[in-house]
Length: 174
Image 1 (cartoon, rainbow, N blue to C red):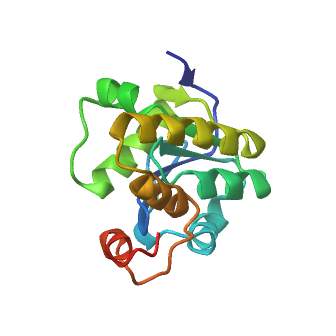
Image 2: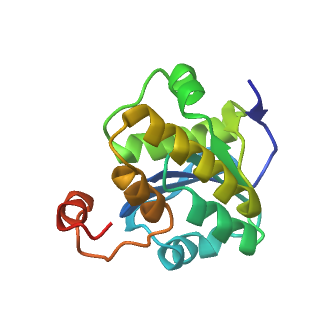
Image 3: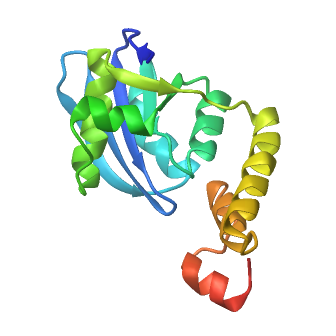
C-alpha cells in the first residue's frame, strides 16, 4: 500500500457524489479553514479553493464520479491524489454515513501522511479502461449495459440536471 506523504500548506478532502460534494480544507497545523457542502461541479470547486490555491493538495476517494475533479485539478496545476476506497476503509476504521466527517477524514489522512493512493488513470487511458470494464460488466450481468452507461455518463456529468438517474433509466434516456 502506497501512502501520499508530501508536505503542503493546505489539505483538501473531498467527499464526492454525482450531484454534490463536501469540501473540507485543513491548514498545515491541522485547523479547519473551510468546510462546506457544495453542488458538484468544477466552478463550485474552484471558487471554494480559490483562497487556498497556493500549496493546496486535493484528495478524493475513488468512486465513479472522480474524473472531472482530477481533470480540473490537472488543468489548474493543483496536485490531486485519489484514495483507494478499500484501504481507506481499513485505515480510518470504516465509512460513516456523514459527508462532513468523511471529507474531514480524507483531509486528515492527507495531512498525516496516511492517505492510501489509488492509480489516477490519465485521460487518454480512461476510455480503454471503461470499455474493458463495461465488457466485463455486460458479460457478468447478462442484462445489458444500461446501468453501466448511466454510471459512465454521470462520471462526466453528462446527464441532464434536475433528473434522477433511476428516472432517466426508466424513461430510456440512457
